[in-house]
Image (cartoon, rainbow, N blue to C red; front, side):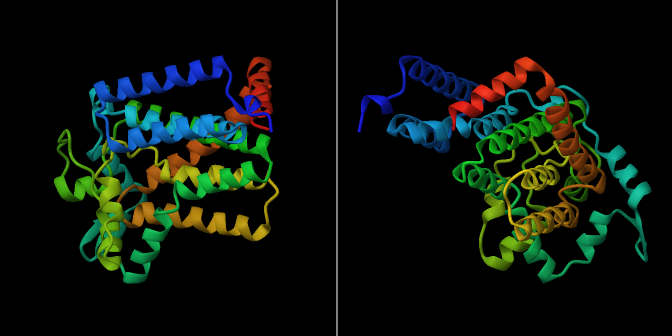
Length: 311
């Protein structure tokens, strides 16, 4: 075995070093360093220097790393400092479009499910929402390790691109989720902590605090539009048709996708409007990437080089 062949080049080491230093410094100064940041930096370094195969994996996973970093860095400039927060307008529009008439009066679907919920749906809601990021990432890893790496790269980059479109939406139109209205009314209160809303019933049922832990680290509660929870499985399902996938797996993806859409509304985390815009965000991201960006020679050439590197 040629040990020297497994070593990264001087240029690769320089890029890694500068990238990690910039990430850690910016995060420390403007966000606040947490233990997971150190663990992630150490893991990246170990994989990068272990072998050529693990180094390729680090480079391949870069779109997902950039997704996590960009989400974390939204704490630097909260979206509510850029544009006014929409609390009542979104609520009123949801009620006018999708309101449910009951004996208590006209309710939004979220308010209806806040009153009418059951243990089975509470449990399934938790399972569906636990899938929203892990399933796409596992799908991507499946593509990578079955040597469908060009398809993997398209999937990973579209996943990142859709997130960036969604993040732009957060800044264009900061909006409160349904649970905020239920808890605080229509007056915007800055620095409001994240809330598990209806997912708290899953935590209580199972004796776990998984969602309490996740939503306690929410970068910004006024980022409900579009619902990126609703977008991820759309991207996953689309690229499953481009990959060598079993039909049963596509059916599972479709079931999870629909389950996440329902859960977003059922648990009070999103309005139907948010879900619809999340789906549109995914479809627009796929369309722009595949039909516009990939037809630009410089961009498609970069993608070709990227795919060749991780082969």
